[in-house]
Amino acid sequence: MMPLIMAETGVIQSIKKINGKDDTKQFLKNLGFVEGSEITIISQIQGNIIVKIKESRIAISKSMASRIMV
Image (cartoon, rainbow, N blue to C red; front, side, top):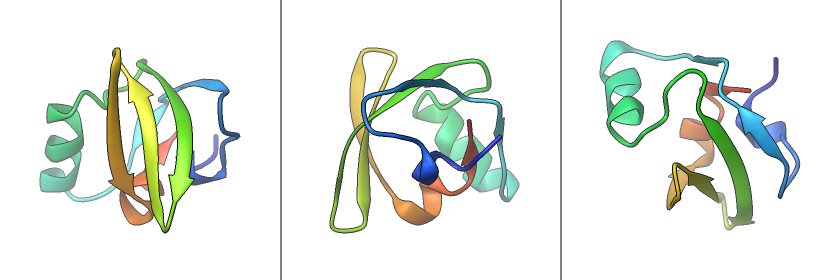
């Protein structure tokens, strides 16, 4: 297991665990970041990461990405 920020761009990963406080976990869950979902990093720009999850592209900060374990 590793944080999402360490994953390679363009490689499909599976979300194993989400760390953080309950409100952070709920925020990510509402965006579709749930355990077992497939996620792919599209690009990294100025500290933000653009990911593809459930046919959507979402930009998240590096601090949020560090809480998502793949």
